[in-house]
Image (cartoon, rainbow, N blue to C red; front, side, top):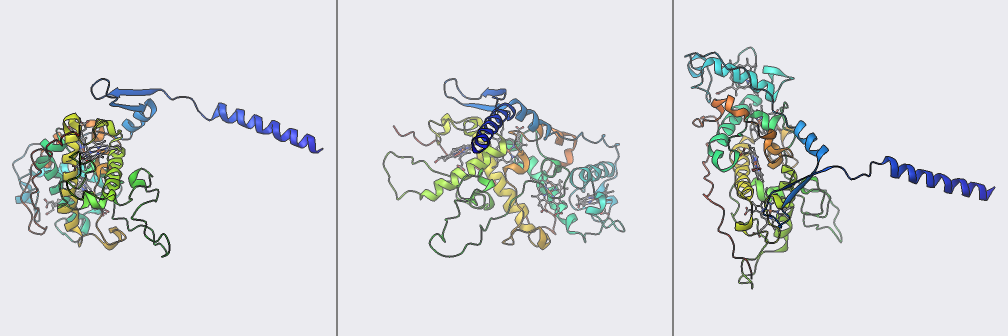
Length: 370
Ligand code: HEC
Ligand code: HEC
Ligand code: HEC
Ligand code: HEC
């Protein structure tokens, strides 16, 4: 009896193994490889075809609304409380309101931002935030056009995608509440954090590098620039945080390190791709958006929108990119909304925007150690 049950067990295990091998889909999926660097440098992007198709499908831009009828009436003259879109015609203004509703609050409609008894009323925090968002969008499409967003530009949809709260936002991560004891200090790492691709790198690297608009331009550094140390150098923690950020950037864009770096000389700018320069400015742009647009809204957001430490929701590379190197498959949606591409003056109700000029070019290439 015992032999029979052992035999039955073995047969069942063998059959299950075969079934597992046959049905688990362990076949090499068809790959798409795109060489993006000089030949022989192994600078290539490898994706599965299915993955590429899925990402494309998840990033389709909505069609632009039909053009507005021409008119001379200006919104600033016609309506009572228009502070940003003053010089836009009434027809264009209403077209934008309809598109904004489609981009940000399609379920809730106009009432998400408006007290419909009185459209001029500013009592809802959503309207105050949206007014600042209008200025932020104009600022991105003008100040950051050359250096980052190019012809693709951004509309509210780039981040919101039909939801009042964008899917990819972040807060300062206070980490778990840990008991004291032998391993009480974890240096903010050794947890499988999604922001760093579930690696054990520091889980709050974004606060160090993307939240603060005044962070040192040379903060994100690992490699020495001289063969022998000339100063005390940087702590290993900086290297860990740098790698954490690089993983975030790669995941946000759906690329690997070689999209920007020639990995034989990671820090060397002259061997890097042009995309690395765009990314360098992107880092500064994100700091600008978080520091000058979102942080000043701290007292406007209700407490339930704030993070565990009472900080504002913030933008990172994924907020716009969502897994693609050019958001929304590179669609130039903003071209149909010229009012979102011109900066307007600062409204009195909002804190003044500090114009942060990004340096004209990235730091000079570091000499390659011989
Ligand atoms: C995502 C937020 C949001 C949504 C949704 C929205 N609006 Fe607005 N609306 C605003 C903001 C912000 C202003 C003020 C713009 C400014 O100061 O330049 C405004 C102003 C207005 C005004 C001018 C009111 C006045 O007298 O000052 C009208 C009219 C208006 N919206 C109509 C609409 C209509 C109609 C809808 C729905 C189709 C709508 N809005 C949806 C944010 C929104
Ligand atoms: C660069 C990305 C980005 C762009 C572009 C953008 N937003 Fe936002 N928006 C955010 C983030 C981040 C928040 C904070 C999320 C939250 O409220 O919890 C936010 C919040 C809001 C809120 C408040 C939602 C709530 O319930 O808390 C409104 C309303 C809004 N945005 C409207 C707009 C409008 C209108 C536009 C276009 C003119 C726009 N946004 C463009 C990133 C963006
Ligand atoms: C989208 C472009 C991009 C991708 C992808 C990217 N990086 Fe970077 N990397 C940069 C930029 C830009 C800097 C410089 C940042 C600065 O100076 O503010 C940098 C800096 C670095 C540094 C510091 C170099 C120094 O001077 O000490 C290291 C190390 C690094 N990256 C490693 C990686 C690794 C590993 C990956 C893949 C996981 C990766 N990067 C993916 C753009 C990128
Ligand atoms: C406000 C939205 C927004 C944010 C936030 C953002 N980007 Fe971009 N990025 C864009 C747009 C739009 C383009 C397309 C530019 C074009 O068409 O030339 C782009 C292009 C790029 C490119 C060039 C891609 C290519 O194939 O040429 C790189 C690299 C890049 N971004 C890196 C980053 C990194 C890294 C971050 C975070 C530090 C970031 N971006 C944050 C909107 C954004």
